[in-house]
Length: 493
Image (cartoon, rainbow, N blue to C red; front, side, top):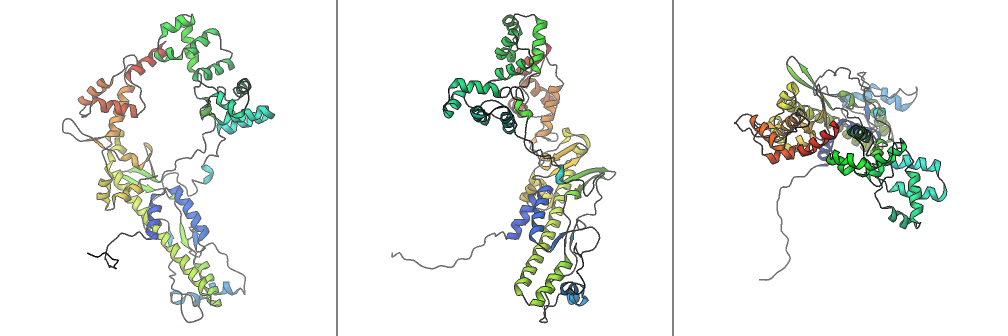
């Protein structure tokens, strides 16, 4: 059988996402604040797009031109808006629609504003200014106190400090990299350790606490011995500590109390970067008819097509017979109209999905986390008639504000914990909240073990294994019963 090239025609079906559909999907996943930045960029690109002034006039923010200005006269000429188009001098009319487009959710729902909700309630000024990092804070102190070689060595040491203020690289390696004696690096490190906050530049936790004790003039031999045996403090071996420090129980209690007043991570008190306030995208209010979901209109853009500017540019293009300008105008108009429709559809989808989530989790809003039900993206998608991926995008980076606080929409989705007696399943978040409540109510010196928690939860009808209880406890950052008892003994001392 001979082999050779040949041409074949095959018909296949593939799903192709148009650029507009891709943009709409991206808009759906943005939060309201991210959407504001996206719309601001579009306002810069599209001259026909403008923010609504809420005056009911779709003319836009333009001021009328001077008398005799042909562009202004063309905009004011009633004939320019006849037959739904703008004459171009050739008898043809641009295919433009002079019906005013607005986007302020009138087509979604005529929702009242939440109490205290003002259009100017959120501005970029509400974002906290970016604070100096720990390295910048220390470098500023080094620049004001040191000079020459000492300053260069100090900056090299500051560069290898972590966010908590600890030295992350052995001092020997720093000295070798800078080609200086180790004693010189030790001397400059001592200067850095005098900077604020006290305790930065330490190599170990014991050194960090010792620096703070020296700053308070409390680094006596007894305190030095206590700091040198932090492992015994962690174990709660008070008898051994009393023997090593040669103090009685009362003095040891005072020393432990002072030890707890020191900061083990002093660097975290400085910096932290930009602090962003969480601005809710949705509000949930309780009414006589149930819970009502409202969009946070203060953070949503209100857009219109600037018809006055459009008429001016269209008339100018028609008078010059410039087809490129006409095409640019038509492209800007189509882009503006599409964005307004996309924003309207986005708001409608978010409101529909959020309303279904609130309906499914009405018990949470009425009674708290213990009534949180298991919920999946598929359940919400089936109830709202949208795709599961759409629900996932809607719940990404969106926050909901209610009487119980501010929650991300994804918080309301949780797997189920089956009931041992055949009753209604419970969400994992509700079980975790119950574990936390049981631990908070325990006797400090008689903490509940994982087996005890498992037995209590089993009596309440939750079918969980002891290993699962331990996994949930660790996920919440709660120490084991042994560690909780040891800490209680130290506090009692």
